[in-house]
Image (cartoon, rainbow, N blue to C red; front, side, top):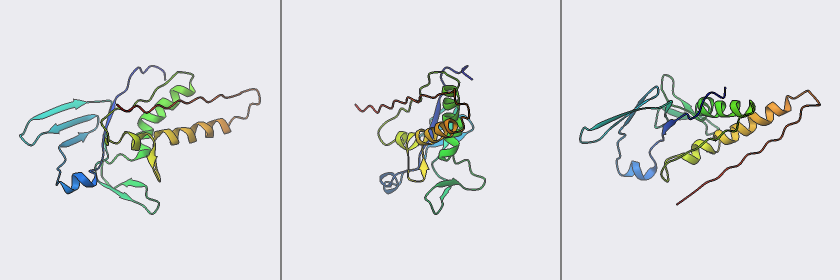
Length: 157
């Protein structure tokens, strides 16, 4: 832990109602850490990240509203994204390092969903908070004290 400087991931969200109404087609494919974009005119661009999260389709919502991957799909649910990125940030903070989790993208890209979540689909921040306080609650040493300080900033331009 602590040997990571910057780790980069990308996530593709489902189409919204507007995009569905326009008959949009998905131009993105993901396999492991690799992301490929193919334009209607046939041009292609390939990228490699530390992780590529497919969250466009191939999921089912349960009775609570949580979005689970369909069997055999590569759908990345909120827990998977947390396990890949949130957990490593949390573990580095727990080890005493200053950490930052940064979400960037245009309006409507899914940053808030990944970070905060919606309903039963909790994002990285609330899952991390639950995990921090679970770990603090496991403290059985009366001489060990914890101070939790979290800052969150949302910037619009």
